[in-house]
Image (cartoon, rainbow, N blue to C red; front, top):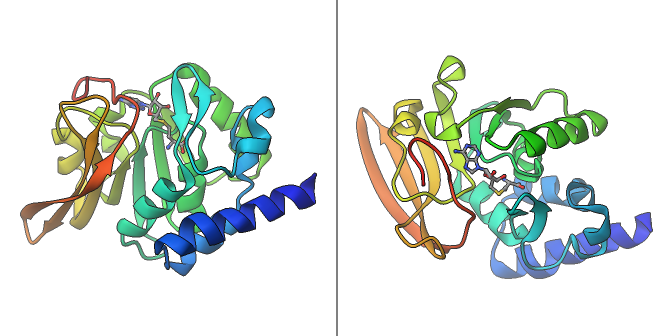
Length: 214
Ligand code: SAH
């Protein structure tokens, strides 16, 4: 069983990530190491390394491996940076960022997911990933500013508190769009007081629900 999962994971790295142009060694080694199958429900473990998102309960999903890798790469991080994630969900993306050497803070609005993920991350000994149960569209003001912010749910607009809590220089990645089925992945850079916006690609995320979300 353990051997099979390793093999599935290696195949995922080769066929879904490297073959599609993911080259960041920190992203690849993090995703090669993390047991993604432990972040999904037991009945879905054999599908954990397939090329699509999977349900994690409460109407939410763990993102497709390629999307996790792509966003982690596009975040242009260096070890030691602080990163705020909005939408902890399964905790997989947060773990990838932690394995990349980042100081990770992650906010989830659903109580059940927050506590289930807190338990899992403790079992896996990721004690240094800090989790909070709250509306992440308000950010985590006491812990900011953050070098990087990554939002893994899609909202209608860019939450102002997140731009405010971004360090200078800093970068924010967020799926945005008025259409709930299809968003644009947007990258916002803060540099010398200027804020610029760049559209990366079309994506499909679950709803960002909150004061500055749906
Ligand atoms: N990064 C996650 C993806 C989870 S799906 C992973 O690796 O598994 C997106 C998550 O965002 C869901 O769990 C959803 O409940 C959460 N979410 C939606 N709106 C939110 C908000 N305002 N604040 C925090 N979390 C939110």
